[in-house]
Image (tube, rainbow, N blue to C red; front, side):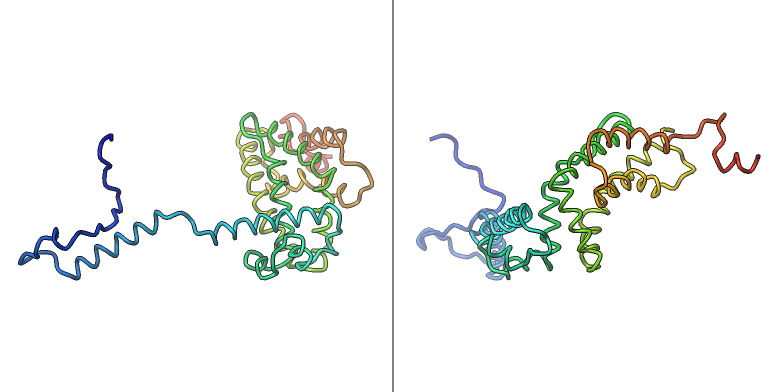
Length: 254
């Protein structure tokens, strides 16, 4: 029925009835060459096989560990969470956790990022100013709830454990700043942001008020704050008009 199947790129060697096999000819394929061909065919067949059940189980365990960590973070302070409690909640052994992460902080940070990054993206399209404004509003909204509490705990634990801060910087902070740096530099090229200010300082201006309010909790992280912060931020980062001297220049000419 239908047309005959075409041979695959890695055909499996077929066994022939001894009576059907042609006798070897002089100068034909050597036994070594035949063995090499069979080995290559077997390797190709192995590559086409589905992943082993062990790999699938490992992936499932990893997902279970992250889900268990998030569940614990909803009701338990970070300082009270341990590798043992995560393993117990996930139904796995501690060795399974250490297969992917070298510390509790690494597990917690990845579990946090699993949801946080997707909730606070850098919008694409539009002007850099619009993208940063939208990003800041998303971040303030996210940090006003559960995510903000987790970040504050991670940073607090990092004050006594440099490895925690290192994990946080390497797994989250550096990557986030790299994305923001591209947008800030685009704004500088377009003339939307001043170029007489260090780019790193400009990025700090974007985030510092948010983290200060998150840690101190003296005032809420809400829409009113996000609106006011974005307005002030754009005023500080905007190019200085030619007719208006910078404060330092005014002092020199006074």
